[in-house]
Amino acid sequence: MYTVALISRKGGAGKTTLACGLAVAGERAGLMTALLDLDPQGSASAWAGLRASDSPVVVPGSAPQLGALLTAARTAAADLAIIDTAPHSTGAALKAAQASDLVLIPCRASVADLHAIGTSIEISRNAGTAAAVVLNAAPVQGPLVSQAQAAVAGYEVNMVPVVLHQRIAHVHAFTNGLTAPELARSSKAAGELAALFDWVRKEGRLQDGQD
Image (cartoon, rainbow, N blue to C red; front, side, top):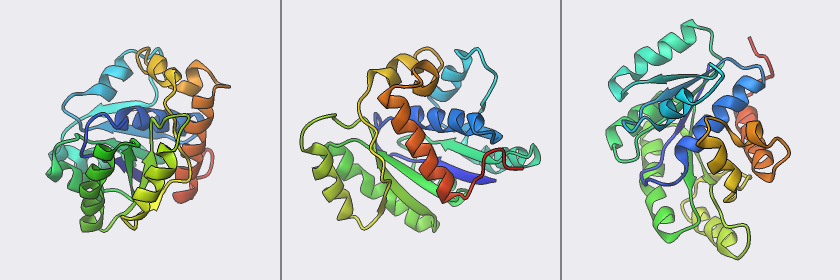
């Protein structure tokens, strides 16, 4: 089972939206996927409650329960586990990073967000887990994306070669218990999310419908 933790020490980076999007993409690729909601706000669990579909399975929990939750996912033959973490708990984030194969660090193209990723990168390094920063909710036009990419390079951390831009489809989808590809399959938002999942799948060497 390939496990991905989404960690952001700053709220508002779009961590939960990406976690839900990746989980749905995993299911649609034929991978049994579990989304573990460790954020006390329970946004992923609330999103799941709005869905007409019962997949992906979203399991609320806490950091102390993470080991048992992952064991249960493996016992259920899950191929992919996505962990949505709380933004302001270093201990919980460290446990998630230690239990994962990959840490994804969502980051907006703003000074505050770029400054905050340093702590998330340090958490992944302390855990000994590979990490990558993904630019999320980026402006469609202007120089901020290239400036943010240059700033991230200074941290000497991998960067996902996919930029997810600020798209209204993500907002409309999430508030209806959907993801952008489910709401508008041919939208740019859907294409960017699909590209992110493809990158994650290649990192984990996951095949469609993997046993």
